Length: 375
Image (cartoon, rainbow, N blue to C red; front, side, top):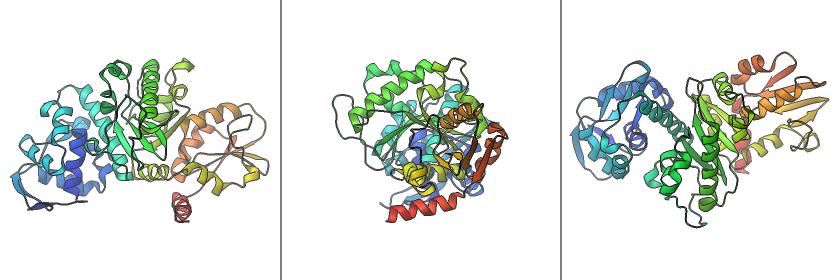
């Protein structure tokens, strides 16, 4: 018998699938121990007796089904197991969002679902509330305080439903969701393991629609930042620079694009972003006030220390990194980028020999920001 209790791996799978519909088997490592989750998925494709630890209700059923091949292999709930979703309150949302459990068979729909599923898994692991049926419902009628004070992820499909007349504005967007935290909104994208092809005008309209929704539901009047998940910095960079027309580039729609790798390190980076005023606190810890630029320099850098212009890449902001590199390419002076060890290889290749690189461990950053939070 498998007991479904808060925090258990089985409940985690059920809650995740109630929100995203399906999950790629190649990304099970995002949920925790990959070996353990693979074994659990295999076990749950055979009939088991499940017990709701809160109510005592029991059901014997096959919980999961695995279909597809290679990178398209996907985990879904088994149709006979759908009543279990009533135990967590997610059945109605699941059926309305996933065509009454009838998934389209084309690769494009599966790719889209997997893109969203990975982003949700990363947010889930970082401590973000992500289940739509437990979040306050968005509206577009008046200015109200709807968005919760705690970090919350609203999926793109639910954002599109806020007023039927708004659907055309966001029909072609690659947006997977919107992350609300500490009075800010981050548009969420996932480029996975390939350059994300996208339409600049479509993303600009999606951003405008997100501004409207954020203003009415959270009093947020500007959305100029995005979280971009992906498997490598190189793929994320190529995604930003995809269009030859500057007006349609990703970093023209969002001035700040924080790259978060799809791995354990990325989960830790995302967790840091949930700390109130996290980046300002980080810069305060790194540099003396008299050395800080406070975004008033003639180009993009964070501090001028002992004759060296220093940019902090601890925020993973690839858009800022592009602007920094373009500014210092033919500029005289000494330049330095501060980063985590995991970012070094990409930065050395991208910045070239004229920019020095220094590192700081993420353990130290987590400890310092955690101490600041306790104070």
